[in-house]
Length: 244
Length: 249
Image (cartoon, rainbow over all chains, first blue to last red; front, side):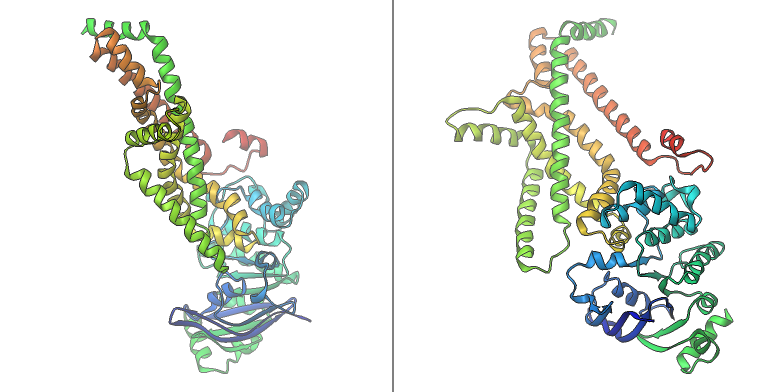
């Protein structure tokens, strides 16, 4: 197992507000890492820093041995480390199929026929093949998120970052999205998932990171974190969740 | 009343050659002015929404360009088009020893540059009103800023500003009438000429009124129809195949 991403001493402030204070962790190829923690603990900010949607104020993010904060070609890096958002962010002016083809066509410069074939392959995987000609606004939230996952998969990334992929969904749609992510985990895709779905985090991940007030408070296997948490903050957080 | 209507119809049929020529030039100037104005608006709008660069030279260059665009927008929005026409037309003659610009191109130039100033603001507003998530979605799959603008942001901006474009077009159809001050042979110019030939001033201008209204009303309806066409149906039917769906919209 080789390290694919490691985050060393990552810091991020918005003005005087220090959101991330010295974050250190790493992800091996094939890992499914779940990041849990209360709202405002810096989970999403950290994920957005890894995708460089936010510019870190300190530290380094090493991807395949290279510090990507020094890279000139950010788009090329992002094509390898894809992101799936809470609010889907599908392109509203394109059909489902076009949404999944545009990255292949314009970023990877794949020819039209191949791009279409590959987009269809991944749309089938997420069960959205019957909707290829629909526009995003004609879809439900769960359907949109599955298309967003297919769009990320079509780029054949090394890693996919999920930023609370089910937080904007109705309860009955959460399941269909989590099923897709579980399937990808079983196929060995490297993923970092920020989530509030504790049962899902326990079942799908092999590495759980608990964040609290901008630092990593505790990390370990799902058994360690969920069955036998060491820190008081972790216990408090989990007991609040289990009671709900 | 019957006499009046007869006179109105009479004037139109008798001078229809003039009226049609006037309609032709009015529409030519208004349409080209709107299209060129939109192009100016798109270029300035895209420039003004370039994210701040880390390169200091590019940053300073952008600041200068932005300042020039701001001056252009403020000056052309802040002065009447009738005055602009005179200044541009006679200014050109002043600097070229009395040689004047050809009238129709001069008219198109004046309307374009005036519309461009308004379009600059319309397009900029359209771009910044697009959800930030659309940019992030594009960046996250590895698209650069230009690809994002070209494939994702500008197509959505165009849809959103279509009502404002149609508004500008209607304004231009009416406002080309001010170009008669430099002698452009548009609809108002011919109407004024005809009214002096018939001395039925009221009836002649009623004809012009009806013509202007038909032109603007048709354009408004046409663009509204295009808007609906772009939007397509709000629900998606799965039971039809690919080609049917395309024709259906």
